[in-house]
Length: 141
Picture 1: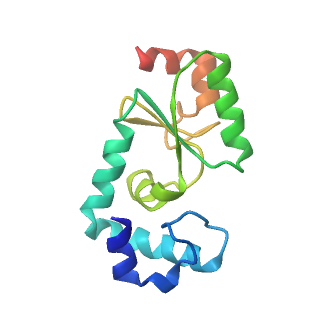
Picture 2: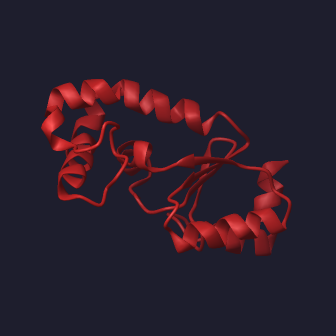
């Protein structure tokens, strides 16, 4: 999938050897934006994301430098919730297409998007609010 994106957009868009690994440079941001517009025409990338989301009961798309990721991770760990942590960079274009959000973290329970640290696309979303209400544990059962 990443190679097909590179061949479609050209390898000059990314200074790294792996697609989306650093959104800090303008060339990497260009590739991420280009890839997001390409996604509807790239079912393989959507399928790769779907497989990752289904790979564990709780999947946590993470950005190592993100304070909201650390807060959500700490809250889940404090509650003893097991989750699979995945670097978000490789999946940002597909997550944007699927959820309309590119922010980190992006948390999924049994294939259902539940937002980030404090919120999401629904009023009940967010790791911390869901842990406080018991909704997170309820969905994990």
